[in-house]
Length: 463
Image (cartoon, rainbow, N blue to C red):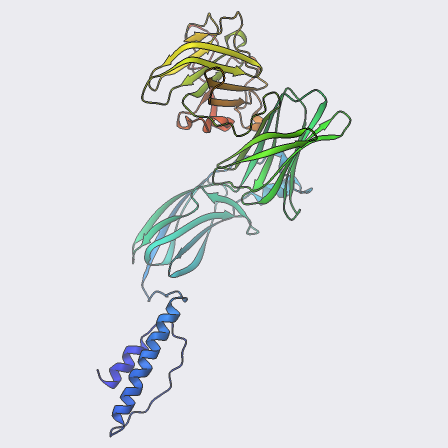
């Protein structure tokens, strides 16, 4: 290698922070020593370059770019009245949720995070745009979210991030669905004693800057919600039971980071003088937390096995109320005894068998589509104001499935527009058949199909 090639060799090293002195090379006996010095310098430079490359991102050469086509669907939901934050007006709260720009962040092992902004059209729910000059590379990590005019995050991707390969001079396409970067906490309490007058609930950020709260009067089935909680807000949930003398008699608290993207399960505890009472909570994308407690049958950490799933509930037809169960397995299941509980009322059914992927309807004796009946003159005591419906193996065995049905209480996500006498069942969406998914009212819809032979009842019992 010539002395000049040596210079060309090490001067091409990228991301070099060391300084090289200028050498004047002359002919004669010093050439060997100079060459030795140059080779030594070259090795030192190469070592320094390797060390620096561990920390500094490699910049692409001119033309080493690809393009990223981003296809986005923005899912919006109406802002509820409970949006006020420490007195923030409703109009301000609405403004905080309007997505102004789409942010696309691209990063990789050797690429520092680079952000691109795309203007969104508020009148459209979809957006397609191409980000140019994206550094090429394998497994580029792509994150997408939306921000308001102040830069606050309004929507997050249903996937936290995705990986794609960016190739030179080629377009790579990704699809993303953005959901509101906020959610609700739904609180269900059953069997509150008459001495309780009010239930208060709040979610407060740890720094005390943001407070989201709501309260409702006690009812046999008490439902309330705390709405529009921002994604990733680190805070404290507090639920208080207040008696007729305005004294707080029970309190439950829990600290957690609210997540509008993933699932989470945790427990709350009501604290009172006589001891601890369990309270279950489930976090479900996109950002709905369910907190439930049954005073009459306190049981923490209830595990639903999902061997049977409640898939249809008729609560607005009086004596003709029914529930439908589904066997999600590929084999028939049999029960020596199957127990159904509707609040305080318990029914025991002997010798129950349900075929593979089959349905099973429980109703009153005269219903032509019932597979089994209560052997009573009336129907199941399912109320439009809500019920805790539980199905068990045996008389006291495992909980196969449990649904806290909100009835006509659309404030906690159950289908709106139904009345106590509408005679329309609520049906679990087919893509939400699961013991976890059917706990959430948003996964249920009002029946639209007339039940044959009834004239004015809507549902699909056994179908």
